[in-house]
Length: 237
Image (cartoon, rainbow, N blue to C red; front, side, top):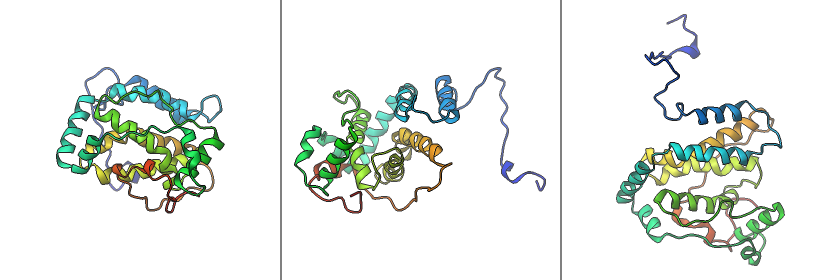
């Protein structure tokens, strides 16, 4: 053991009778996912393939690998022991705002900051076609998307490539505070985890690393998109 290199300690080779590449992970066994990971981890950054295009290819692969029946069962069980989450689903609140709806809010308010960022950056609010959620996971993903831009402001992250790290770091810590089943929480964070790793890959070789501080606690039921006239405490200006 004394001659074993420090970084190699604890490695336990596992043999298999298979004649082909095989893993106990459904993710490692998927050739499309392996090809996608190889591409984004080894490619150079360039304008011909912007970061959102990477996710456009990745998300259908993830959906194909997900056990939707198991996720729905975990959501149902979580709602049985988590009354706050159950009430959030029962209410079924969805935002219906458009960009012009934010012009009424004063500068410095949550709505005013959002309006300035959206119009100056020529962004779209609805980046995927609208459809009525047909499952608990689809509703969760819908509301996650609708509140994501507000998380940029409330957490202090700009609407830019570097700023994407801030709300995703926040989600990596926040979801486990409100979802009691860690397996369910991990399922809900798969997109966030991948995006953090991809963004960090781009910036880890550059000077000026972003600091990691305490992240705010924002419960799903708080609806930041209903507090548009208030200033964001401790967030972007």
